[in-house]
Image 1 (cartoon, one colour):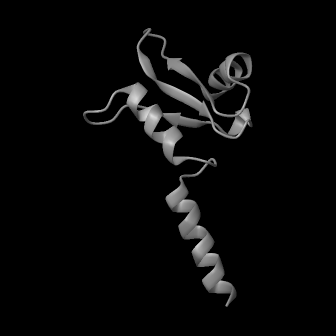
Image 2 (cartoon, rainbow, N blue to C red):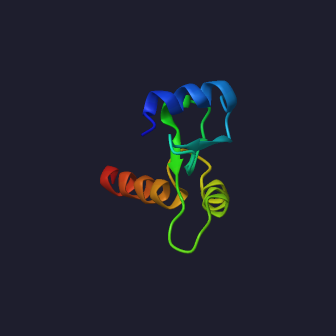
Image 3 (cartoon, rainbow, N blue to C red):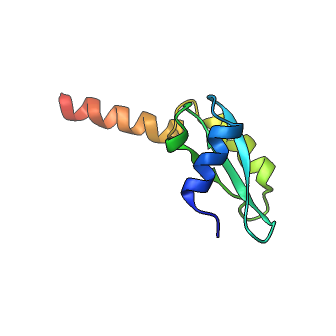
Length: 88
């Protein structure tokens, strides 16, 4: 099993800039998914894996298209709205 610190080292080496990703491959040489560096902060990478009827590459494309920040835009907007309502 690959550990978080190993993935962080891989990100620092190959994808340390904002909006870069690296393939995460397990000890069995099987691709597990991607570690996506959305913000440029390696320790806050997003881990992406394939789901039902979606490839790893497509999953990465979808995440990149909906994430301007580390959290998805829908969650960010909901949080922003709830904070506005609480402050009223």
